Length: 335
Image: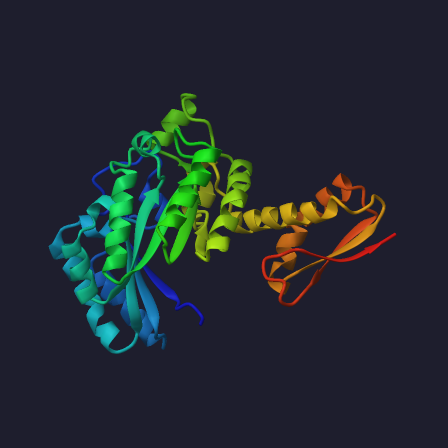
C-alpha cells in the first residue's frame, strides 16, 4: 500500500532542553519560527482547499513531548477537525527518548497520533555525551518499549560520524536500533552546520569531519542490515534545503542525493562480489530490479567505470530484471 503523503509542520528546537553540538534546527528544517495552532490550521486549510485528503500530519524538528502540555494540546487540537473530515488520516511527531512516558503517550493517542519518532542518534553513551544529547542509550531502549507497548508505530533516528563515534560504533548502533524492532528508521550522517558548536570543534581540530565519502562507506555497511531485518529506511541523509545548499552546511556529509549514493555503493559491492570470478577481458551483463538500474550504473557512470577497470572487463552493461529485488544478478558473460 502506498504511503500517505506527509504534510510537515516544523517546530524547530521547540521543547529541546539541550543544544546538541550538531544542531541548528532552524537551518536544518528551513523553518525559522516554531509553529502555532494557527499555522497548523492554515496548512490544513490550504491542503483541504487543494482537494487533498488522507494526509499524514507530521510535527518535525523539535521534541514535541518536551514542550508544555498546554501547547501540545493546542497544536493537536487544531488538527482534530481535519482528522474528522478525512483531510488527514493520522498524526506523527518526533521527540527525545527522555521525554516519553506512559501519560504522554496516552494523551497523544487520544489526539490521533499514530507514529512517534525517537531521536536515538547513537546507542553509545560516550557518543551521546560528547554530542551534548543529554540522554542515554538506556533512555532510548525504555522509550522505544513504551511506544510499542502503547500500540503506536515506532520510528528510530540514528546518526553516523558523531563526536567520539567511529565506523564500528555506527554499525553497532544500527544493530542495536534494529534490535528494538522499529517500524522504520532514519539515518542522518553528521553535517557541520554553520554557527553550531560542532563547527567550532571542527575548526579547532578536535572533531574530524565526517565526509560524504565516509558517510557513503558506513551507510553502505548499515543499510543492508536494516533491509535484511525488514526495517524500512525512510530517510537517508538530511532533507536538502535552500539554507543548507546555500552554504550553511559548511562541511560534513551533506549531499542532496546521499541516499542514492549509498544505494549505488551497496550495489557496487554486490556486483564486485560476482565479478571476482569473471575472467579479464569479458563483456558482462548484470541484472537489477528496474528501479535500481540508475543506482547500479552510478552517478556519471561511476560504478561502470570502477568495476570495468578493477576487473579488466571489455565492457559492462546493466539491464532491468524483474523480481531481482535488492540483488545483483550475473546475466551474461561473453568473451
